[in-house]
Image: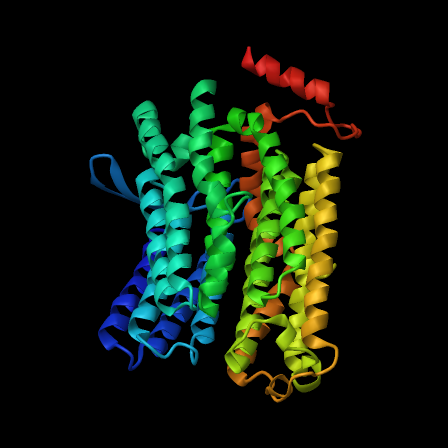
Length: 513
């Protein structure tokens, strides 16, 4: 596929579909949206099949570069990390359209157009190789999600949409200022070039903090996570799926693409701040999840805890932690999206998310209970599911740096098992106290078509994670080599063949001199 602009095509297809949905109105918008998202899924599969994994392959593939005007270019390209996140995006989008098939009855043309526009912008974030192009895609993604929550959300949708928009926009203002300074200093907007540029230690500190303000809100990290539960509770089912599945991953992608390679010394300097915030998030949000009565809010708080595992793995500064963080991001995208979908399925029948209104659903909805159990176990990290692989790698990576951080994170995982099993027991088992819940019918063909692919993907990643790690391995190794000189000293025991804390500190000091 050399020379074929497949990345531009993947951006153009949903954009054209969004325009078609607006023109068609409510008549055929959902059919157009489904066809368009399936076409982009096929293009994504072609992208994966044609991605070069041979020895010595170039890091950036399917590169497109068209200068537009001074200081701005239409520059696209992907590495293995971006490829996996693009695949996650195009895989979830048809499921989101299916989840909206019957529940969205008003202004369908605008609704599906907003989703297709968001698909364009999500793929744009992961493919952009120009700094300004990335920022445009990154920020413009707020608009369709703001509309989806604000127009088709719940009773408090206006409050939630404004909170979501203002939190994420405010954090990104500092990032824009930092980008302008970087372009002035380095003389280029090319992201691969900036990833290899050596900014001064003082500049890195301020640049890291500016980017951190944006990515920490996007993840979201504690204590700037409070917009997420409100957004999830008020968003329609498909909005929650794509918000948890992909939009949160933009924060992690930002750390991987910008903070770590461009500001390695500053990243090491602030690693313990990231560890502290992440440890608090793992424990505190897990405890908050334990006492929730709203299913969506419980899963939203669990998302904060799981994304904290991502940041801990990223700032472990080793291959194991980086690989674990990527797998956690991919797994969380599938599992949290599936859990929100499971909530939406029974919400469409009973129109309540109160946990106490359900019970004993395994009796009258055995298929639903089976899939809900699979996704619950994946969220907990049961071996054989996608959740186990990522958490195991991340915890192994952070243990090489700090056994205390690893201990706290493991405690959070135990708490995660507590609130997820408690949720499942109250929903699927026990006595059927409410006649309307006992009368609900099992999964329809449309609902099975949504949960079966998610279930297979969760098991595939859990049983054979190498198929997901292989495209990313060379890029993660290159990132590890870039940050190696700034690795923070840890308190873990020294293992054979690994430098101790004092040796790492000496290497860092020698590099500084």
